[in-house]
Length: 519
Ligand SMILES: Cc1ncc(COP(=O)(O)O)c(C=O)c1O
Ligand SMILES: N[C@@H](CCOP(=O)(O)O)C(=O)O
Image (cartoon, rainbow, N blue to C red; front, side):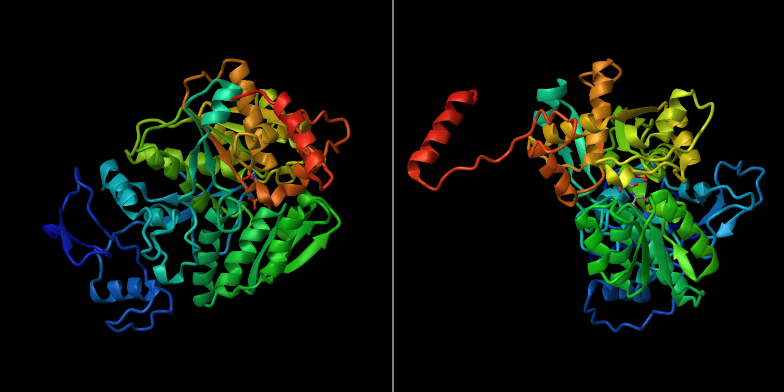
């Protein structure tokens, strides 16, 4: 074994000498490309010393100063299988979504290789990459590349520098409505296509890019969607020049969501069914045609989504919050959060994981009903219409993953009626946020758990906001116009129509000032 690791710093001209057994790394090395690097791609045009963009720069660094090789790797294994006894596994370069028994798959990382480096090393490495433009590590997802897709070449990555999303201190909302002073909202929807799906899609489309360069028979990528997966898929595919095909339930997604894949040049099928119907169809189609499946049934997606959990810990300087609340539909994301937290604990970055809460709309609540039956019997439901339209899902593909995550994290499932979720959204907006109805579902869960005393006033709590409110303006317009049947719209704030003359405007303002409490 060599006596030292020579790790090449991408941004600085000096090489860092690290001890051969990196057990304690007290100072932040400034940094370390632990090279991820099978260069199986055929895209390695030999760059000269003059680098003219960040991708070329990364390629040039690798050619001129080959970084320390490593043996990090990942493969597909059947979800929930005991690694000690199961022999079934697949390369990530295989096109496979299900195990032999028809069950889910999981991406399994070689923990023994990752564990050769202590938690302090990983914390310092991840921290060193935040806020940079270095390809591809400036992305919040690819800053954790060794834990995501360790073997992909940086050249094959399709990224919009996603992640690194705002962890917002909800000071006024916490104080005013919940008597909490340590409430945070992780704004995953303030993102390239306006939802957390970007985190998973950069990984999936990057892998497809690699597979196509390997001449695997893949014409394009397809998904069923309630509007956010399709937006992310079409944007990342368009950026890489890969065809995308999206199946959308007709008249069940917002205009803003519908126009995203249209604008990005996807082949859009508007199908007269619900999301579960579209999901069934895309599964059948992708087993017949050379179209790669991009829904979270494909476990690659969750590898990207799990980085939001790591990012939360990082943003708290590696302190672990008590609670993390996630709205759930197809149920991949709740497992992705569990996986991110679990990896941080297993690899010594933190010493515990938060308790997870999965929040569902009462109109589409199969997980909630299952939880309430003490996990006795799962029954898919017919999902009814909900303002939280992106989680109008009755037969979630990741049900087993969600149950696993909740059991392992001492988790809870809550639900929100239409009135509760819309009121919660309006309340949050009235304190300066502009959230989506799904975040309203998560906030309702928080309100209920505060009321019952399960979540205490001082508990550090993170609510995951999954999409941008601007995608769901029609629901806000309906609410603030008092235009929703059988809903009181208690926090509606409709505009006042007034004639265009000084007297009328003054009358209206005087009335307003006399009624409004002074701050
Ligand atoms: C905005 C939004 N929030 C929450 C979810 C739920 O995520 P998951 O399907 O992973 O449970 C989805 C998609 O389903 C979504 O688009
Ligand atoms: N909300 C999702 C539903 C599909 O979920 P996925 O994570 O399995 O792709 C969407 O926006 O389509």
